[in-house]
Amino acid sequence: MVHHIRFLKLKANTKPDQIENLMVETRIRLLKIPAIMNLHVGKKIDPKEHAHEVFFSMDLESLAKLRIAEDDAVYIKYRQQILGQYVEHETALNFEMEPGKDVAYS
Image (cartoon, rainbow, N blue to C red; front, side, top):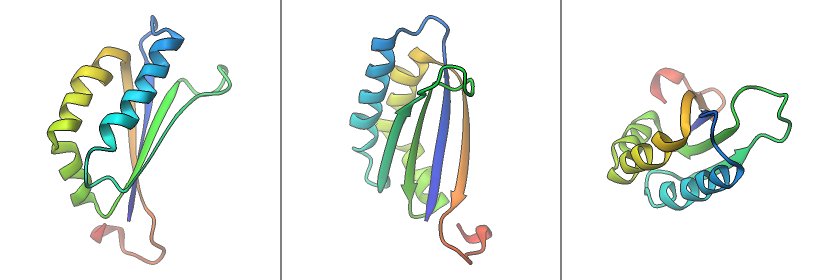
């Protein structure tokens, strides 16, 4: 199983209600994608911590399923309509969740 996480650096003029909207829209839209098994969305608690204000993470069966999710029309629209509106920069990381599994086969 692959755990995909994205850290989002928001545009400077993003307001607290827009952060809430980003979180809600992330949940609503991404949970419609069948390849996504589990989804988490959160906002930073301490403003002095890391530069990224919001994250979302999801579990998928494999990297191939991640590519399928990212090619889904729902995800493409989400990136254009939501992330494009609020996000200045993002960092994405992928992790293999199964101990002993060769990551070459993730």
